Amino acid sequence: MDFLSVHQPEILPGNRQLPPTQGVIEAPHGTTIVAVTFPGGVVLAGDRRATMGNVIAQRDIEKVFPADEYSAVGIAGTAGLAVEMVKLFQLELEHFEKVEGAQLSLEGKANRLSTMIRSNLGMAMQGLAVVPLFAGFDVDRDRGRIFSYDVTGGRSEEQGYAATGSGSIFARGAMKKLFRDDLSEAEATTLVVQALYDAADDDSATGGPDVARRIYPIVTVITDDGFRRLTEDESSEIARSILARRLEQPDGPRAALL
Amino acid sequence: MSTPFYVSPQQAMADRAEYARKGIARGRSLVVLQYADGIVFVGENPSRALHKFSEIYDRIGFAAAGKYNEYENLRIGGVRYADLRGYTYDRDDVTARGLANVYAQTLGTIFSSAGEKPYEVELVVAEVGETPDGDQIYRLPHDGSIVDEHGSVAVGGNAEQISSYLDQRHQDGMTLAEALKLAVQALSREPNGGEREIPAERLEVAVLDRTRPQQRKFKRIVGRQLARLLEAGGAATEAESSDENSEDSSDEE
Image: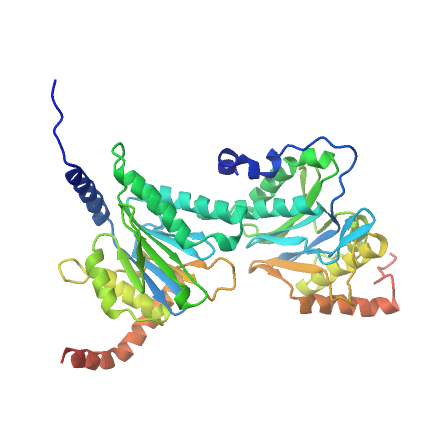
C-alpha cells in the first residue's frame, strides 16, 4: 500500500531488515493447497497440517482465506509470514474497493499478490518462502480462474486445476487423472478432497482427514454468488464418504487405462 | 502604509461560521435514521457517481452534506484511519467514537486556523451495534464539535425543519420500508412549507444492516430493491392512514 509505505513503513513486511543468520530458520510451514475450476466457479481447498522440520507443529491450522467477496488465497510456506501477507492483501483489496467505489479486476488482484510475494524474496532466500495459490471468480468473464506463483513472484494462470506446497506433486497427479471439464460443484469439492487425500498418502508433511479429532480439510467454493466456505458438516461428509470408499480401495478411484 | 482593520476574534469566528453554514445550506439535505435492523441513510442525489454515503469499516458508515471535494477528502482520510487501525490492532478496535474524534479534531483545526478557509461540510458518522441499543450516530458540524444523536438526524440545507419533522414522527423499531418512507416524506418538505415529489432515481439510499451475514454491514440499496421498498412503505402507510388520522386528532384534543 502506497500510503502505508510513506506513513508507517515499518509495518509492511517487505521493509523489515533481517539479522544475518546461518542456515535455515525453523518455523512452522504450511503444506498442500489445491484448486479446481468447474463451470460456474472454482474450488480452493487446503489440508490442516503445519510442520516444523520433522515435527507436526499444528494439526488444525487454517490455510485458505477469503481475499474478498469473489476471491480466495491458499497459502503454502512459512505460516507466520503467509498469514500476515494474506492479511495485508485482504486489507488492500478492501481499501481499494472503499476508496475507489469499485472492485479491482481479478487480474489486478493477482498482479498485486505477485508484487507482495516478490517483496518477500529476501526472506524466501533464507528459507522462509511463501507460495500462495490464488483463485477467484472473474465477474467480467463469468468463470472461475486459478493463478499460481513461484517464490520470485512469477505468476501464471492455470487451466483446470493447480496445486502448491510439498504435497502438490501427488495432488496434481491425482487431479490429472480425475479432472474433467464438466464437473458439478459437488464433484469438484469431492475431487479436491480426493487430491488432498492422495497428497497426505505420500507426503509426510500433508495431513489427511483426522476422523478421531474431527479435523477435516478446509474447502471453499467461489461462484457468482461470492465466496463460501463449506461448513464442518459438509466437509466431514465428503471426507467420510471418501474414507469409506478407500477402505475397500486404498488407492482411490481408478482411471481408465486407455 | 495602511493599517489593517481590527476585527474582534468573536466577529472573525462568527464570519467563518456564517461562511461555512451558507456553503452547507446550498447542498441538498440528507437524513440518517435508526430502524429495527440497523441504520438507514437517505438523501437526494442526482449523481450516480458522486456518493454522499459510503462505507468506512465493517459497522461504520459515513454521510456528508456540503462541498463534495472537501468531504471526499475527509472520507478517504477516515477509510485510511479505520483500515490502518484494523490492520495494526483488530477489526473490533475500530469504533465510530474514535473516528468521530479524529474528524472533530481535523474539522476543528481547519475551522480555527486563520490560514485556511473553513470546510463547508457537515458529517454524520454512524455505527450499527449488535442490538438497537448499541447503535451510535454522531453528527459533526463544520466547527469540529460532536453531537451524539439518537433516532434520527438531518444535515444540510433545510436541516432544522426536517429534523423537527423527523423528531415528531420517528419511532424505535420501525421497519426499513417505514423508515424509508418517513425519510422521503421529510426530505420532500420545502423551506416555505410546501412539498415536492422526489423521484426514486434521484434518491441515494444505503443501510448498515446488522442482520447481514457478512462482516461488512454497509450496503447500497438501488434499482429494483429500492423500488420494492418504496412501494412497501407506501402500501403500509396507506393502510394505516385512517388509524393515524384518528390518533392525530385525539392527540390534538
